Every structure is written in C-alpha cells, then in structure tokens.
Amino acid sequence: MANDAEIKNKAKDEGGFLETVKVVLQALLIALVIRTLLFQPFNIPSGSLIPTLLIGDYLFVSKYTYGYSKHSVPFSPPLFNGRVWAAEPKRGDIAVFKLPSDSSTDYIKRVIGLPGDRIQMIDGVLHINNQPVKRERIGDFVTTDPWGRTTPAIQYRETLPNGVSHQIIEREGDTGTFDNTSVFQVPAGHFFMMGDNRDNSLDSRDRSVGFVPFENFVGRAEIIFFSIDEGASAWRLWEWPWTVRWNRMFTTIK
Picture 1 (cartoon, rainbow, N blue to C red):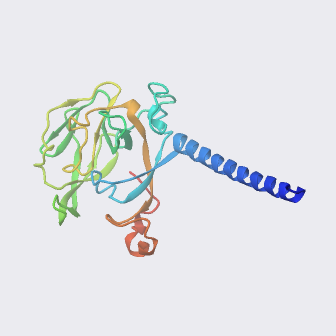
Picture 2 (cartoon, rainbow, N blue to C red):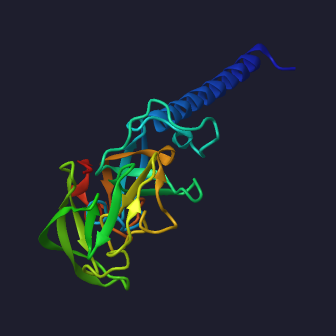
Picture 3 (cartoon, rainbow, N blue to C red):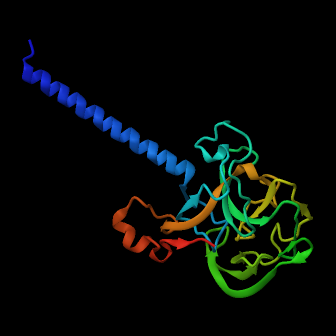
C-alpha cells in the first residue's frame, strides 16, 4: 500500500508532466498564430530569381501585406473564399503564391503584370501595355549553365513603370525560349509573375503557371535572415565559417 510520500511524489510528477505539455502546446499555438498572421519562413530551392535571390537563401514572408485567404493557413483548408483585409500586390513585389494548377505548391516570383495589363516579351525586352520597359546593361553576373558549369550571364538593371528597379540576367542572351512571346492580357483579379533569371524561370509565360489569382497569394518576401552556399548543409554548423553567406544575412528584398 502506497504511503503519503509516494502519493505526493506521484502527484508532483504528474503535475510537472502536465505543465510541460501545457507549455509546449502554448508555444505551438503561438508559433501557428505568428506563421498564419504575421511571418512565414521560406527557403529558395531554385535559381529562378537569381540574382535577387540565390539558392540557399532563407527568408521571411509577411502574411499580412496582402490580407488573408485560405492559403494563409497551413494546408489551405477551404475555410472561406477570396481575401479579407485585402491589399493588392504592387508591381515589382516579390511574392510567394500557390501554383494555380494544384493550389498546394509554393512558387516565388516577381509581380510584373497587374489586372488589365498587356504583357509581352520582344527580343528579350519586357513590354507592358505596348511600352518597352527600360533596361540598362551592367556588369555580367557569374552563374551556372544547364550543365552546372560556371559561366558569365548578361545582366541588366530593369526599371518598371512605377519606378521599382531590380537586376535581371539573360543567361542565353535575348534568344531564350520565352524572350519572344505573344501578348498576355492579364484578367481581372489575376497577376502576371516572372523570375529575374529570365531564361531559367518557369513563370506566367508558361501555361503550367499562367495568370495567378489574387486568392493564391501567400505573402510578400521581406528579408533574408540566413543564407548558405548551394549544396551546403545548414545543419553542419562547423562548416558555417566558410559556407554561410554572411553578407546576405538580414538584407531586405527588393
């Protein structure tokens, strides 16, 4: 038969365990709220936004910038349609969105076309509403070709009609697959997205992506909080001194 001391110790152990569970659940709830309403971390697995974003960049995306849709919640449950507290993306924003064809895959591209715009590529030059977008040749950017070999890529500074200026690269010059297109008329409630690595970006120029509904936007890319060389492992802390890109840490995304 258990004595009073044994009963007290057992009750104390159970109380300590329940308190630990309570703290863990509270922490998970706080993390879920932050992830859903404020900021969500993402990492960059592809080179479609080189030179702005590199493979191995880790960034925070603001969830509140465009308001909230079902895609603001993990796993996109069908809680409601449309957006609440909505604010439309601006031309030049780098945004995360759900791929329209499956509504589960996350893509990240730059907002190029707004509802009603006419978008076309002519000899590598972006045209918006029949007007060529200004681009200025700057020094080449060193990247890799389709076979993984280091190679220089032609680089431009492109300035959109609203004054947003950013760098783009043309790895294949002005003769790439999507450097000459037909006119894309952006439907109401949709946006036209493109990567800054113009010859290596699957974006709205391709039917598999197409126009992106406003509802599919997850948030706007804000800041790089960590960056590591392509192919390196973030978990190998002892390699950080030479694999972490220290100069990219805590830089804002434009």
